[in-house]
Length: 122
Image 1: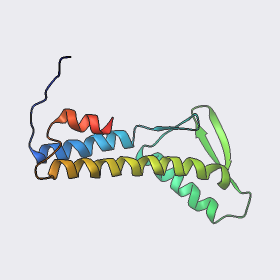
Image 2 (image 1 turned 90 degrees about the horizontal axis):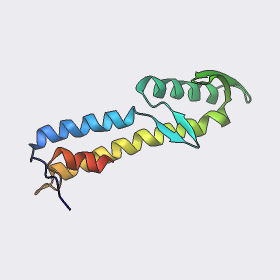
Image 3 (image 1 turned 30 degrees about the vertical axis):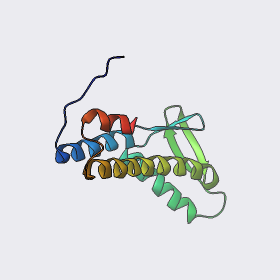
């Protein structure tokens, strides 16, 4: 078995790299209940706004969303699991970044290469 070693990088460079990897994972989408969900910042905001709207609307109110397959009508009960999946994905990405940053900043560090950051986020 041949191991590929990566070059040791400064903590400052790795912290910035970890933030970039987290951002790419965050906005890269998530699969939930067999549904591909967009998690880019605009989609996060639209979903949050829709949940807020439906939470303050009469029972049974539905919103209209346009997805890759066309328009869908969603009630609060239908939208909430989607919103929770997206929010859970985003929070998991930030939690992983925090964990990686702690490992980079530890004394001694346990993450000190780009490859180790990539592996942690895999």
